[in-house]
Image (cartoon, rainbow, N blue to C red):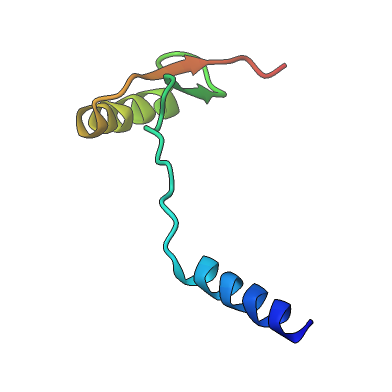
Length: 71
């Protein structure tokens, strides 16, 4: 019984010490959509459009801006 416990402890130590390779995914794999709770042409919309233009240039990903109505 003691031998089995030592073997299990050794296997657990090897498992914890051995680096595991993580599978990385590309982010984002779908277009990112920002919902803006203001009408088109509003100050918030204009500022967010300017910010997103820089982010699109930096990440070269598809980023969409959508205006929604809150009723």
